[in-house]
Image: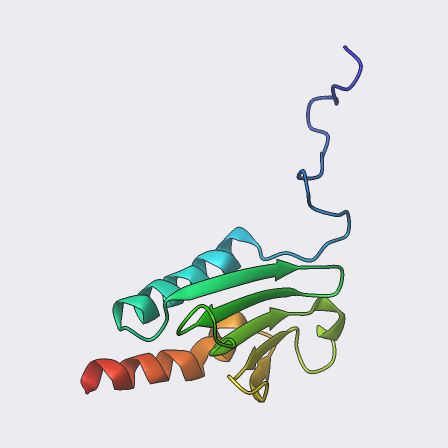
Length: 119
């Protein structure tokens, strides 16, 4: 085996991603992006940002790029055994929902989406 090549089946960290960094799983990100797409279609959101660090993974949704996020979903595994690792924050940083399951934490945004479709 040539130098620099890992053995088959070894785990290699993603370039630019620090070891031990918190991230969303594929299923979690799919659920969040599905909601984001529906909010874009409803005219509520226009941009998003992802932030990953050692403590948390954060998805922020914006009505306009230059504004503060209208909603922020945070995954913080260190709180898994306490109030739950998922938190939904509102535009002014207030906690809207905490929980152990992502669908329950996203429920307030889902309800807002239903209201905007009914209008």
